Image: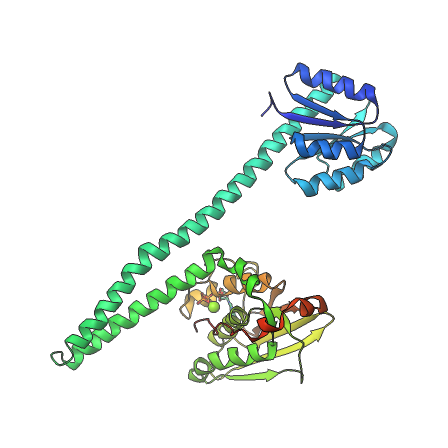
Length: 387
Ligand SMILES: Nc1ncnc2c1ncn2[C@@H]1O[C@H](COP(=O)(O)OP(=O)(O)OP(=O)(O)O)[C@@H](O)[C@H]1O
Ligand SMILES: [Mg+2]
């Protein structure tokens, strides 16, 4: 990107505008100029510049304001501030506020050309990064679609046929053969569930859950998640205790996916606990947030593993050496919690246990007013999440 690149210059000194235009047009750039911030901003709308030079000291809108509005409009535009020697400090401030570089007045044509070239290179890199991110996003979605159609459909057909065979051959099969068919079906079931988990983790549908947010009772979500994990805990002789205040404010959220998030964390607590151990769930309100903590006294997580446990497909040493899993539970959980405007953090001591804290913003008055009464009667999705 150089010849034909679009450069906008905003400065109240006519001489500066003329000189800059002359230098850049000589190099085949397309140049537009404006004598103040307001005109500069409206020109930026129609001109679509790659790089914008902004004088910091202008009557009317300040250079800082222009910078800020330009960045909000299109973060990939590369802004550069023009400044006098006396205002070097403000040039530094401008760079802290998002300007890419600054040109101190007076400048030579060569200095101006160099800065413009560097800014255009920066613009090229920024646009490339955006394009790569978009491509990555598309790959992610396409991969989900491929898994869904190419893998899921034939597996479901095999499962269906196995079921039919089992029924049709019921009186001709020995018990051992029936047992073998049942095992086949159960393995297929596991496989289909695993594909579903992958799809949930990879596909972008979580972003859409905001559309079905309703006032959600956190105590109810906790109770259901505990109920879901209970049979698994009982098999390991693990007691799950709850410490909740008598009442908790509602959150603005989706009961089904919140339940899935909590089930994932609780089932991890059970999974990575020693048999006969204890798992605790507690909740409290702090300021405008509800904090839900899940504590176990299990194997714990080494400090070098902690930063990675919320990543896709990450399985720590406890995971790999012990129980089965895909390394997706916490990644899905983090996405669900973040879609609710919340956070999830973990603290752990290897050999002593771990505490996971989910923080959710309390449903604010504005949201309460916005929720239509009829929406509150809509049925909620069933609690998901495999244990
Ligand atoms: N409560 C816990 N105690 C100790 N280690 C944990 C705990 N929770 C998570 N981990 C570690 O973090 C890793 C990632 O957890 P995550 O739930 O994402 O995957 P997983 O449990 O291995 O598999 P799955 O996809 O079935 O949940 C685990 O493999 C384990 O090493
Ligand atoms: Mg897990």
